[in-house]
Length: 115
Ligand SMILES: [Zn+2]
Image (cartoon, rainbow, N blue to C red; front, side, top):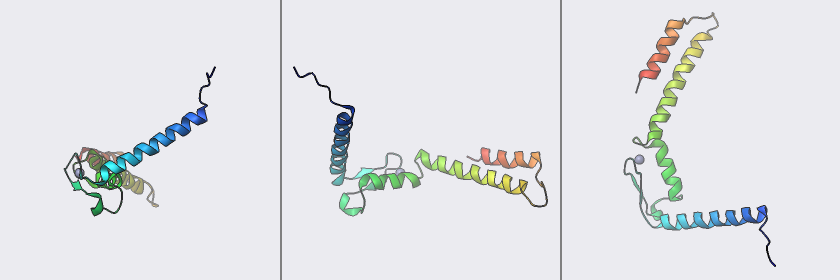
């Protein structure tokens, strides 16, 4: 009676093989066709026109796409980080604390309200 279950290592190994198989399949499917950014419609391909994988190219585009939500998030992070740095710099002036609460609030409010 063969009632043996595969070991955890065997299951993981089989899953890794399946993932690799599917990745190869995705690359094959994307290799001969154009792909478009769903936010701005920017078109890439076919594969012969791009030096790296289509998935990689799309990933690079997403980081700079003006219509992708990530662009807004990136701009938000940059703006808020700049405001925080400004507050920290002012606060750490060697001559002592040169920034008051109201000024800090003003810097923070300006950074938060820009959209
Ligand atoms: Zn785009």
